[in-house]
Image 1 (cartoon, rainbow, N blue to C red):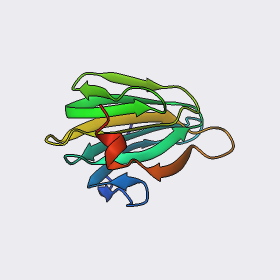
Image 2: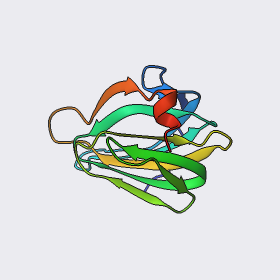
Image 3: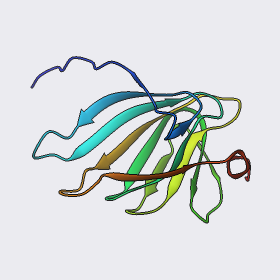
Image 4: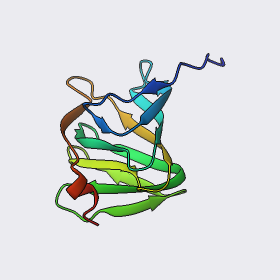
Length: 131
């Protein structure tokens, strides 16, 4: 057992996020594990771009109120204690509502070969407000 030093908080890049989003890496999948876990903090209205994960993703909402949508599906409201499961390859986005912060734990596996995630266009304001 070891207590690992805390890594610096990282700001989400503008080509993958709208608004201010901050990451704290919790687990980076040291072999033989491929599990990735990150605490993600979204400011009001901040959100991911459309993206998918090769092996899927699970979100656990820790605090606040957010939104999530699978491509072609309804925009869903998510809050503290909610678990959002995205299957492999499903295009989706997630973020905070317009007047609240939202923090979630993002958990996913890295595939044995190939990219973990694919990123596409930023979610437009119209898509964000379509609920």
